[in-house]
Image 1 (cartoon, one colour):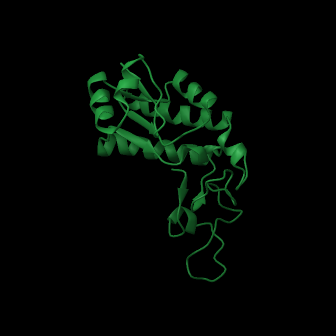
Image 2 (spheres, rainbow, N blue to C red):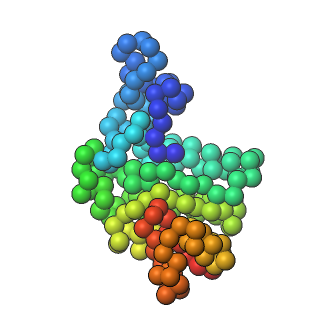
Image 3 (cartoon, helix red, strand yellow):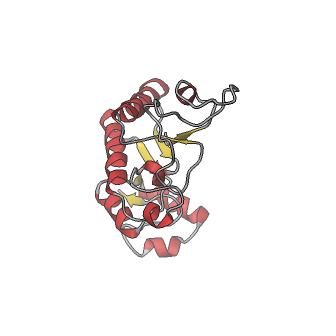
Length: 179
């Protein structure tokens, strides 16, 4: 939900196809995508998550997946790209705290939980400590039962360090909060 490739219908309906081959970047008329990525980790065409149309589309997808496919969670890829405040190649900006990114991710998570309170929301996001702490305060974390968490950690890494505190932030893609 943060980038698509050239053959996506959402891109193809409004794209710059100068070679007439069905490939090209978003055009200025595209209501969903940025002309250039607004973060330093660009891949494909970058969604503008400050656009009301993109937010509405994203919520419709979440609702469809939860209600029709009965999914129990979503792993959001490249969540650092959910900001509109930076430029391609500006790692300092992209890696710093971005309120617009926190707000839009929180709104998507809250919407998921309004449809299914047990829905897992997983962010591929290694932000600044300040932003990750904000995510923890606003419930933007992966919530697992203690039993499952310990099994997961035992099979991956660092269980001894994890057991020393009630809540521990892990630096491999998601924060984990014990119930």
